[in-house]
Image (cartoon, rainbow, N blue to C red; front, side, top):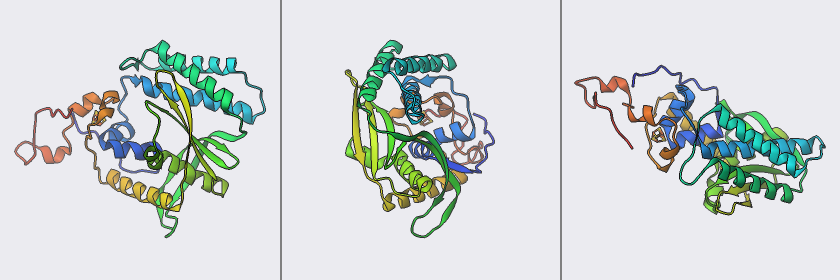
Amino acid sequence: MEAKPHSPKIDHLSASQLTLYLQCSLKYRFQYLDNLPKPFRPAGLAFGSVIHSSLDWFHKQKVNGNGVTLDVLLKVFDADWFSQCVEAEVRFKDKDTGPALIEMGRQMLTQYFRAYQEMPVGAEIPFTVPLIEPVTGEVLGPNLEGRLDLAERDAVVEFKTSAQTLNAQDLKDSLQLTCYGYAYRMLFQKEPKIFRVVDFVKTKTPKMVMLQATRGERDYRKLFYVAKEVLHGIESKVFYPNPSFKCKDCEYEEPCLTWLGNEKSRQPGKKGGSHETDRYL
Ligand code: SF4
């Protein structure tokens, strides 16, 4: 693949960007710097987006004091799923099918609708906050940007869809939840008392699991240093493939297969040079 110019100038970072860089820095480059077109949308990603958008609609109706019926919520879900399928080719894997995912989503939202008794403060709240080391006061430069899935008076809430129920380590490792906690305290000038994760588990009989986690200063310091190292990696143009089970869903298989690394060090006759297509997967 020809080298494509890309700017290492980063004006903001998000939880998704940090997570993607840590999972596969090459995919980060394809997606956020090279802006390569995506030939398809993995069904799991499309499904997660539709669950999020349906819940966003539901919570906003509650914030605005509008009565919501389950029937209307499910209609919103159906319509959002339809628009996902129109906007891009949705690629299914394993035993997933469109009708099966629609049924699963409807069951999950029904469980949530019946269980949710809180009063939200806001849903999908956009934030742009400076990344500051809590102890030293060092400011990173790029802001942290994103959207809080849901905020309540004393709680910050993250929604997840997963193949199996998240365990304690998953909760501890969630960079997204750390970013939410950090943003919540910057936005509302107080610590959230509750960190709730609502896990929609795509088991044969779909289920919804309410989990709780904690976050504190040590986590926010770690977030700062992870962001700092990721930024350094991006600005130093450190991008390489990191094959894993996630490659099954990767939209960039083709450019990844033809990736040749730092083109300057791969000229013919130079050490590490190659005209052959490298296959990594
Ligand atoms: S196919 Fe795998 S290794 Fe290649 S860019 Fe995608 S996630 Fe990374």
